[in-house]
Length: 307
Ligand code: B12
Image (cartoon, rainbow, N blue to C red; front, side):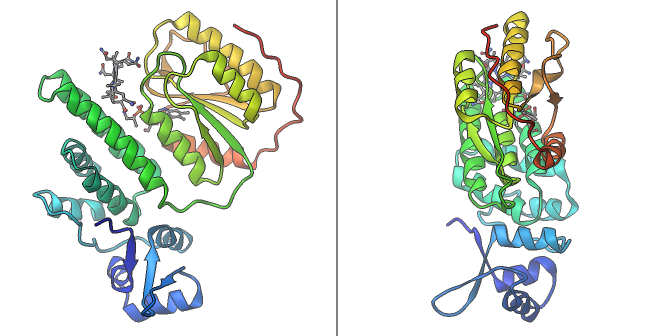
């Protein structure tokens, strides 16, 4: 059973307050709740996170972690200490265990204990996936295990997204793509999710999108920001030319072009046409903060040119 709704007792335990206090928060409307037909208060995880963020509350006790395995106790301690190496071990174990519901419960558990989305992405999924890749390289797991872990991670990130607290809409739009033969799309997904959580409308074209199709999408959507994720560079000259071409199109609408991913610091690429290269979800969050407040200059005519 997926536990994405908390009881009054759960919230009281999390913040070490009495159930009466939790009921009062709910009745005063500070902490949003739903009522069961029997009149019991129930709390969605997104309401809990919204409440904790606005009131600067940190969890001081760990809830039960559904799905008992030998790591349960280690994880319960690690979550309160923000011991990320241990939390990464938990992720790797669950991502390789072929039980995606268990992996989903783990993500929900992290989120309800106020591990921020950027922390889940930068400090858990990223090193966790690198460890899974390293195990494959050492011959400890088969490629089928790495593929399954990748797919289940994407699936679970998407499911988590439907439970997160989303800030009020900014009215802004971002477009996401991995160009050409690029298959590494988990980083792109995390970037899209982060924009969405900050109140942006996100259009994700995903992996292996041809250059011309990204141009077309920019002309259709007129995004405030076009985000590319680049992990593997096949031909640096082609990538540099494509970046310059996309920058022309996006800038023509007053938007910005940003790039992230493992290769976003590569010296092989000419980044001069790009507005920012960012290496983490944390940096991206800061960038989004600035962009959310920016007024887009009047859209000029499209300068699309094939590179
Ligand atoms: C999973 C994986 C795959 C999966 C991808 C599945 C999928 N649907 O995405 C599969 C199995 C398909 C795959 C294939 C290949 N892979 Co691979 N893969 C990985 C692995 C293990 C994990 C990558 C990952 O998802 N990480 C999790 C995400 C969250 O991390 P991230 O991408 O770094 O993203 C973070 C930041 O970079 C940043 N970010 C990312 N994008 C963006 C975008 C923006 C706008 C911003 C602001 C930030 C941002 O924020 C994210 C959160 O922190 C890595 C190992 C590693 N060390 O990373 C190798 C790795 C990336 N793969 C590699 C290679 C070589 C390949 C193959 C060539 C293997 C082969 N011999 O066939 C193919 C190439 C496929 C192709 N055409 O692209 C190399 C790349 C080396 C390089 N730079 O050239 C790596 C590093 C392995 C290694 N050590 O050699 N791979």
